[in-house]
Length: 205
Image (tube, rainbow, N blue to C red; front, side):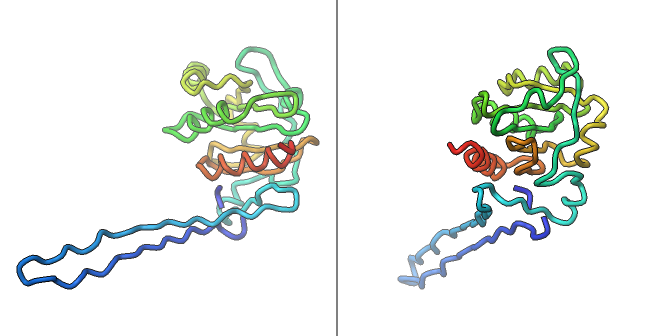
């Protein structure tokens, strides 16, 4: 997760085993190999079980909506045709909204993970919003990722501009009332982990 006020920290511990003394002047003992250990703090959760969102001051300045806010009313063309309201695609308990655009790997990974990790149902819905992407590129990426959930087209980027600036992809999870319960900028394994925790908290599963 991109770390809001207090940046998420990551401590790195490196240990270098000291070289053993030579057992003989002829056959020295080689030093033991280095060991490297990386520890990442676990993001705390609130009383609902949803991970807390931490942003740096720079990342916070790129956000126009935050936890507890409603997303702006969104009506966009759907990839399959026709104008569609985001509200009409929401799940009863949770809705995952992915703002994305073509990039070297983050959006493609997010599309693939959402397709494999979440089974859309009446309770949980997944919606993609492609920002400033050509339709042919969108369909190619969706096919490669196996993503079959609904895709809305923000061709001029005006809808995303109401939500934030730069730093795509972004994942927002809306609760049963349509308010933002959790979100993250860009995409990583911590995003994937905290997304699962959020959905488990909202659905009780």
